[in-house]
Structure formats: C-alpha cells, structure tokens
Image 1 (cartoon, rainbow, N blue to C red):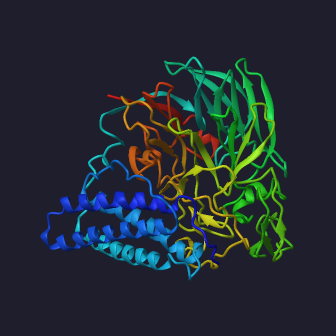
Image 2 (cartoon, rainbow, N blue to C red):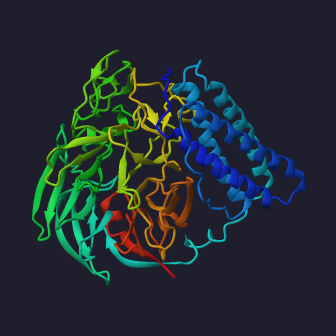
Image 3 (tube, rainbow, N blue to C red):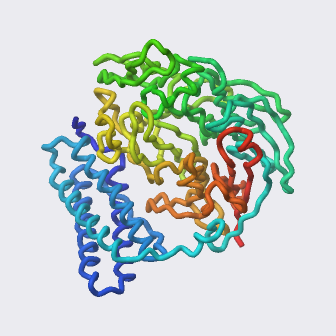
Length: 572
C-alpha cells in the first residue's frame, strides 16, 4: 500500500536529528583514544555529512524549507552512553526512512533514490556503531549503587506520604496545592477517588470525594476545578466517564458524560487552553483495536463495550480467533476490529465515526457545551499540556503491548505535537510507523496486517519516542532560569507493571530530541527513600520547584494503599 505523501514536518524533524547526530559523532571522535578505531569513527562522520546533504536535496524537491539547526545539543557523559544514544537515535531514523519505502512513497517517486541512499548509509552506520559498542567496556554509573539518582545540583525533599493512587496535582490562584487520588489502579477493584489539599507542612486535608475511579485529570481555572473521572466500575456499555466542574466550596456539576472509559484505558489529563476552552483525553478500549481475552476484567462487566472511532473507517474484514471464557458451550469465537467480543467484521464494512469515541483528544466550552473531537488516532494519551513558550499543544501517549489477540512488540511511548483534526495512527500505526514494520511483529504470532483498507493522512511523527513500557505520563515545561533547563519538558515515567522499566523523571529537549534522566529510582518497587513510580512531574506556579507525584505500588488495595507520596525537587 503506497500513499504518496510525507507526514507533516517529517523531513524537518529528521534533518534536525541528523544534525544533532553529526555533533555527537564529532564528540565520539574527540573521545576516541584508540588509534585502531580512528578510521571507523571518521567514516561515521563522513556518512553523516552525506546524509545531511541528501536530506537537504529531498526537502528542496518537496518544496520544503528546513528550519534552523538546533543551537546546542547535550553531550553524553562517557563513550558507552554516547554509543548507546547514537544507536537508539539511528535505529529510529532508519525505521522512519524505511517507512517511506514501505508505505508513504510509491516505487516510482522521484525521492526513492535519495531515500535508498539514506537507508544504505544508515545501515552501514549502525553496523559500525554496533562494532564500536563491543569494543568499549560499559563505564559504570557511580549512581547505580545508590537508592536513587538525581541530577547534580538539585535536592529531593518529601512533602507528604500515605497517599493511595495519587495521579495529578494543581494549584489554585493563591498557590494552594491540590492533589487527586485516583480511587483505582490496575490489579485493584474500582473505588472512589477524591481531591485533597496539601499545605506547606505536608498536612493533608480532604476537600471533596465521591468521584468514580480512576480520577486521572485535575486542573484549576478561574475559580473552579475541572476533574476527569474514568468511573470504570460502572455497568455502562455506552460510556462510563465524565468531566466534572467543582466549585471552591466543593459542590459538583457534571458537564460532560458518556465518555468511553469502560475499557483498558480511561480519561487522561485535562487542561484549559489559551482559547479558554477545556481540552481532555480518552484512551482506547483495547490494546490494538480488537477485544480479546486480555480484556476479560471489563468484558465480564460490560460485554458489549468495544473501541469506537471518531471518523468513518472501512475495514479489511480481518477477524481474530480466541477461545471463549464467557461461555462453556462455545469454545472458539471470532472478533473483528471495533466490535464487541465474539462479533465478526466483514470485508468492506464501514464503521461509522462517533463523537463519543476512543483514542481521542476532546475540546469543549467551560460549561461542557460544544464538545468536539480535536484529534484522534491516539492510544492512551495520559498527559497533556500547552507550551508556555509557543502555546502549542503536546500529549504523551502510552504505546501498545505484547498481549491480546493482536499483540504488538516493542512499541514506544510517544510525545506528540497535536494539530487540530490530526490523526495519529492508532490502531494501524504505532509511534508513527505502519504496524507492518518488522519491529512490531511478535515471534510465533500471526503476521500483523492493517485493520483498515484506507487510512487518513498521518499528522506527523512523534517529537520523541520514549523507551517501551515506561508509561510516560504527566509532564510540564521548565520556565524558570534559576531552576534550569528552560524550555525543556519534564516527564514522569510510572514504569511497567513489573517495575523493570521507567520509574524515572526524564527531561526532554524538544528541539534535539534528546532525553536525559533527571531522577531515577534505582531500587525498583522496593525503593524506600525516593519516589517509587513517578506518574507526574509538575512545576509550581513560580517554576522553581518540580513536584513529583509518586503513584506508589499498584495492585490489590491491601498491598498498595498508602504507598503513594508527593515530593519536590529544588535547586541547591
């Protein structure tokens, strides 16, 4: 399938990344003190120069004008880390270039020869980088032996503990801090969420409760709180979730209802934009578009629930076989995309788009009126924020898993720049790449194919891709020069269920695409002296204090209750 277009700003992003890589290769040349490897490193620099020229030619041929080069890049702390970073960045670029050939450009497109040259050079670079990585012994990180790593020059302080499933904080006009406890976590029974106020001494005062868990979003605007609740415990095959307006005295008004949050993913973040309108997210019902045995926990409660798209899709009629845990007398069922469990799809069938959809970003007025889908094709968009520098809207989106009837291998979490009416690919694209990309294929499972006959134009590529299963969630921008890293984004990474990835706060340079650990939990789920699972990294209004919301342990309430906490990171 060829589509004859290039996603918005795809070449521009790749050129900036390649220019940063050019600087990193020069750093590698400076760090290399082994004369035997000198020629290989020089080859890397020359190939990088050639790729920059090819990208300039490609952009000119497409009538594009490349933006200015990034003004700076962050150097790695040692050779091993530098090689690791280059391997990651070059692998991502190679997959993007290959997607030009496999999906975006027809075989006779004039750019094909240039893309083939990029692919060939990139494969040669990766081969050399792999060889070099084997030559250098990993330089040990001195911080691994410590309970946690925190970037030098900063101090970690605990504000309060004893919280249960905290997800997000916000500040009112007086700078008072309010925190939402979700009322639900994976592995626990659905419960009620609440909002509490936390004073300067860490004292917790209940503010208002009775929300349908999980409470996933909380923001303050012009005298009111706006709350996103998933209410997964409801028996509602239509929609479970709501947006609730809460006054300063705690009275509630439901302003949006019937949100499709009864499945795997719920509501996400909520913010008021520069246009004085509410923006919030709703995730997908399933992992990759098909209800299966991995969804049993909610299928038993809401057997007719499934993903619904925001726009019309024409299906390929692909159905997935699975044994049926719901009926003893029916051993095997077939389930199609965007269908309830056990319901087949037909070739050429049109699935009508609906306002009440999954994998979407919504916008509405402050009273909940004029609800509209602002963007779609997302999977689990859990964090969102407007940049204080350019007012652009950004979203973190959790990637797919190796589970269910249509497992996806090694998908990343993503940081997207959102455009109105943009389509971000789910369920046939992952992290900006077609599902047919070999990386996503799970060994021993049926070959992945598209669920849809035709796709909307992809809105673009992720600004950055985070490591798989890090659960990259709530984030905020640094605005205070004294705190440092002005313009960079700080992201809380909750981590995988097993706790073997994530468990960090990372900072992201959106211009260079570089990601650096700012805080890292080195002791996993047994950590005692720092945040266990950072679900959010949110600055105070002055920007001189980064608040880290620690979700705590997940799973049954008797094991996880009271393990959440709130921390702050300040400049020393």
